[in-house]
Image (tube, rainbow, N blue to C red):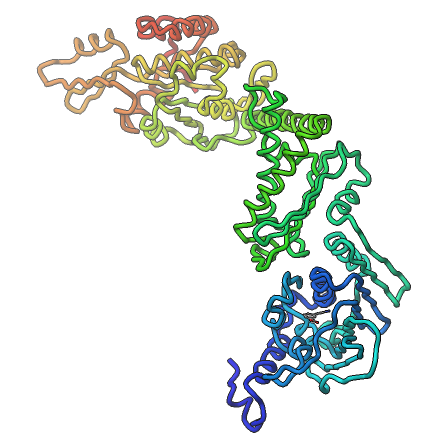
Length: 640
Ligand code: 0RA
């Protein structure tokens, strides 16, 4: 913080106001970037816009129709307008002229304008004083009351009061300034950039003529458009084939002036340019939201009413009604709120509804009155909707293909470390808890685990055409890496043994049936090449003392019990599901190649599963129970 007392000491004649003025000046010179964004070429252009915008305000107020901007050899800029002239009369309280106050007080414009400046522009509204503060020299000449006045400044400080230079004709203001080389270095303006902005302003203020003259190069451009935003749309579309004449409207509702022009063309490229008080709003805001909402609503209403959109067709979406559109939307309001990253987004909430209703009404009337044009426009929107749908489907295909090609492995897969597929096994495990045990119990060097959610097979999802929409099945396909159907590529198979491991109950056999059917229909070569197996977990655990044995069938259980001495106290545990086994038991009984038994699936097995699938879909319970043991060939103690 600056200590005011230190500053004021010994300068007793300073008033409170003059201290404030000095503070503003010093703040701006210390941190110019805070006020004009940067001190490069953009900042330099910003200075020019700031002064021009003041003249534009005078034009918007209806008092000025000509502005001449001159870039001079020495790097200085002159902005001349034919408005009323900035007041030079002395203010009774401050004892200063309005001119000096505006040029030496931060944000004076708003305070000073008070109604006279009804719609204040100013790119960021920092005011002419900032330009003055950042200029080596700054000179204002005013023609007013039949006389010519002048006041000059150096680095923001007046070198004297307003001088009366004698009689003069007309009215107007001429500001000339040299951006301070201490701040900006050598002034380097870009003619094209400045010209584009002035072209824009000329569209937005119809009837205003703006000339940009560059004395360094001799270049000169003059912009003048009577047609306003409609001219802007026509200009933008000059290389396109329009579907109808430019539709434009200008209305003021509740103090908000809305100027909008739009035209559909046969070229796909949404182009909507929005402005608030002549300032571009590339970040959009409430005015743009209102316009978009009106377009979508009115075009849908019209298309429905005219039966161009059938009852069973979904509504046109926002993007559909903008795809072929060029539009300019300019609003003017008293207190614009600029928001967003770069303060180029209009925030005033009331503007949305106003733009929506004003534009909606005009568009609805236009469509009603011009049926031929209307059907051309709606036709384009429908085309856009169809294209959007087609694009969505194509995108889905690509994503699905990508998800299935094995380049991206599913997150739930616990892969093995071995990279030789001939040595690798994939266990497809039913249920989260069994999946957990399997992950812990496996030999992670060559055994991978893919857990499937328990309720994988409900009848609806098992419908053949829906199977692939099942996330679990997609995970399986991408884990295997071979693709499916006609594109199947066995050389990409990531595991040479694929082992289905499900509970020995109805749900388990249900899931096996689904998986077998799926493999039969979509990956048959996996079966014919002997890659597909079914794990066989034990049904019983039989313990006598420290001796433990497992039985995989009822007959086995009986044989074991017969062999054992029953007097010692036999403990028999019946496994109802894989989840009841801890990791060690699972390894011992079902995973360990040295001790487990697995069943190799034959094509005939799968074919019958496929047949059975239909039965299962028919909800017959009985065949499910016995199905798997009926036609799977048992392979015991298969060596790795
Ligand atoms: C407010 C009041 C009056 C003139 C202006 C603003 C004005 C400001 C600028 C800035 C650049 N050129 C300008 N031209 C005019 C005068 C009001 C009156 O005369 O009654």
